[in-house]
Image (spheres, rainbow, N blue to C red):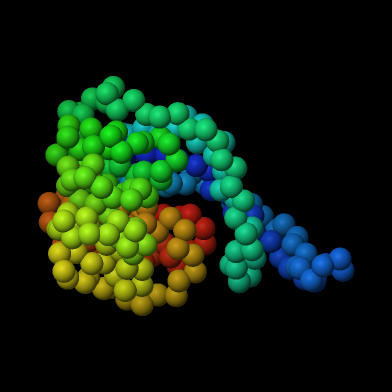
Length: 245
C-alpha cells in the first residue's frame, strides 16, 4: 500500500490537572492547585498520532503548520472529576499551505483534517480533491461546492446543521457522527458497539477519522470501516484528554 498523507492545521493540547480544596476568600471561586500537566499534539497532529498506532510511521506523512507547538489550547481540569473549568487558547498566525507542491501520486489516501485556522482555504481543499480520488475530508468550514470532489466527508451534528441542504446533495459521501448515538451514513444509523461511560470527548473525532481511513484502506468496505471507527472512538472517550485507543 502506498503511503497516507494527512494535511491540516495542528496545535499543542495542554491539560493542566488541578485539585480543589477550598474557595477563594476574595471571590466565591475554587482555588486550584496544579497536580500535573499533560501535553500532546492536537488537531491534525492527533489524527497523525492515531494513525501511527495502527500503521508503521514510515507509511504515514503529515503536512501541517510548522509553528504548531506554539498554537496552544490549554484546558484547566479538575483531576478528580475531570470537570473542565476553562480553556485558554494561545492563537498564532498560521501560514497557508502550498497545495501545488504536493506530490499526490505518492499517496494512496489523503486525509484533510481542516480546523479552519487559515492553513487551508476552500480552494485549497477543492484543488486537493480534484488531484486525488481518495480524499477523506474533515473540515470545520461550512460545507460548500468545494467539497464535492472528496470521496468521503466526516461531519458532526453541528457541522451538518450549519451546512444545510448541501449535506443532502452530497449524499452518501457524508458520514455524520452522532456522539453516543453512533454514526449516520446513507440513511442508516450504525450504533456504538457498546454503551461506555464518557469521560472526555476531546479528539474523539480525530480518532474516528484515522480509524475510518485505516480500515477502509485494508478492505475498501465503508460499512466495516464505519463500525471499526465507531469502536475505536468509543475507546478514547473513556480516557482523559486527547488520546489514542
